[in-house]
View 1 (tube, rainbow, N blue to C red):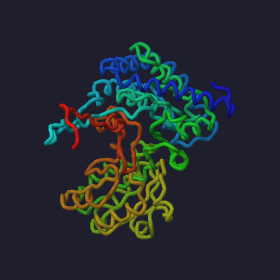
View 2: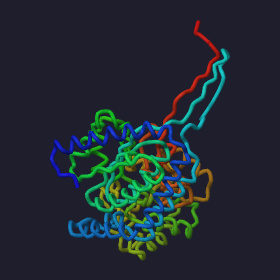
View 3: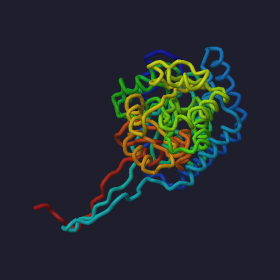
Length: 425
């Protein structure tokens, strides 16, 4: 580990930036075949060294328990053989995808004979700052490589050993494919000064920052960054159950959306139920949540209808619990649900359960979040589930990237104009 003092950190980070910038130039001309070979070599290395990864992860989990990390954070942090297999599968899926670099997005010819093409091109150097989830090391590294970008990874101190072990496998894959190991670098220190250096842009080396973590991390990045940021706010996700919903389907979707994995950003935090359907929908859904071990919070109206409901506070509607807790409210139809989401939501993911197509279309038109689902769990808010192989995060901003940030979102475009000697009069 790097010895931590401000001057050393600054010098090391500057060097990392310079090497990343040089690697990014080389990646622009790297063939799709060579990148795909590297990705498959990375997958092999991770699987072959899974015992080493689990040992490194055990150190992080032990430290996390000792320092009092929440159950949700420990869940995000923990690796097992299944999650390691998912990492390798993700790498191989990304390798199978079409290379976006050089793809012609649009082309046309002007009356003067100029032929114009809009072509996908890498962003350059991407800085990824993340917490807890060590698998982000593999996902981010792979996506950036496939899209022709160099990447600088800065994981949290809680996943330091796990992330470094995974990064070692990525470096092995790069080397085996004849690519520079500087294409995917990891910050070798837990010193927070390293984050500050990245947010300054490393002397112009970093082209965009992607934060992935809690509200505190994302807030700091958005506040302090001097380079563009792919915003990723907390996931205050909603499920709205319309009066036209099938009660059995609604119950399954709500329970899955809340409880499949409570510590991910796609976990539902608020349940909105159409007041006109409350007599048939409210009790079955809430009882199913309670029976599954979920704490339910609601106002007086909900408490009068269902026993064992805890009083809800105003701050609950703004809270990303990341735990087996959900807030429940009755609303007067789809427009009232959309108004609630607009006031309290984070622009991440919302789902409607309904059989009335007109209501569904109203929901899709009125709700302005990155991901909207119909008759499906919010836990599908994931790049892998979208067929992207993996994702760096769910962008909740409205510029450039929105929703799962996959390989296409990690590219920009340039124009190629071909002439035959034209001059402008």
